[in-house]
Amino acid sequence: MPLRPLASSVTFSICVRESYEDDDGDQQYRFGVAVTTRLPGVGVPCPHVNEHGAVATQSLTNPRLGSKGVEYLADGLDVEDALQALLNADDGSEDRQLHGVGREGSFAFSGDGCNGWYGEREGENYTVAGNLLTGEAVVDRTAEKYEDLRVDGAGTDEDADPLAKRLVDALGAGQAAGGDKREELTVQSAAVKVTDTGAEEAPYWNDLRVDASEDPVVDLRETYRLAKAGYEDALDLYGDPDDEDAEAEADSEDGDSDDGEREPEQGATDGTGDA
Image (cartoon, rainbow, N blue to C red):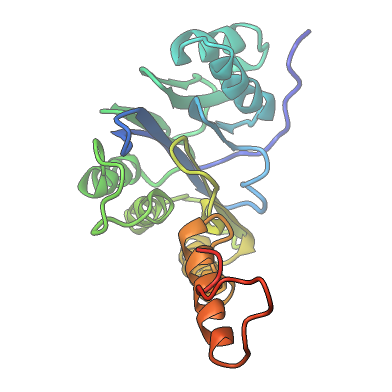
């Protein structure tokens, strides 16, 4: 059955893969995608990510190219075969821009019907693509900024920002280089999505959107800052429910406090409680 498109001209985006070994020596991956445009709500149809890859679908946007793309990656197809097969089945492929990364390889396509300036760039474990841009410098600066900030081969680098923050910064570099050329469109949007196969849970800042703004990348960066601060505040206030050592320590402290206030019941030990 032909894939039905949604009309939504989109500007530029970046998809990345970062690999690392966890503390047990197992291979893990971070996948991320970030996008911005001079239209509202770009975070709904365009960025797609799961534990097997990241895909961005844009220009005359067909969202199913992204959602089916990452689904095919999860089924075991490599990214080139998966995305090319979807384009082959899409009657409107000449108007599409589609790119992404899988656990191995990358893919980037711009149809001849895309509006200029348009183009794409494939680097080491990342892709960048854009259309309706002020020029090629937008794609180049986005790629170069990510390369400057890339973290690969390390599970936890305390000196590095999380991938979501680094992707937003890459968008900011592209925006500063000119971004979308449609200055008459003032309502804009931006989004970032990240998945980490080595993380037990996804922090709040790994799936963020600014759906309507006159300065979406700046607002997305601020949304990231607040989301990260809110997550850290919640941990400080309530603790980590998965941290058994912290829970045991808290129980031990409660036991120590109680021992100083009451006599042991008959038959109880004179210890400090369960440890």
